[in-house]
Image (tube, rainbow, N blue to C red; front, side, top):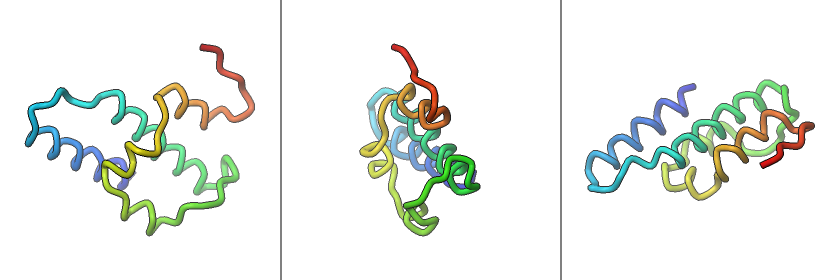
Length: 85
């Protein structure tokens, strides 16, 4: 949760300093990815990979660069289910 709060704060700060529309789709995907990391960290999905230190060092741009659509990110919660679009 701490990562999600930090990322939301950072997105808010970037958005308030710009004239762009709020990046709601990207933010939704990033938050879903962060929650998926929480599931992975507890062993729920058997994730092995990125350390807590690496997660904490990611910027908003780093997060946005690695996520898919919100639907794709939701699929991480349901690895054995095939989502139809």
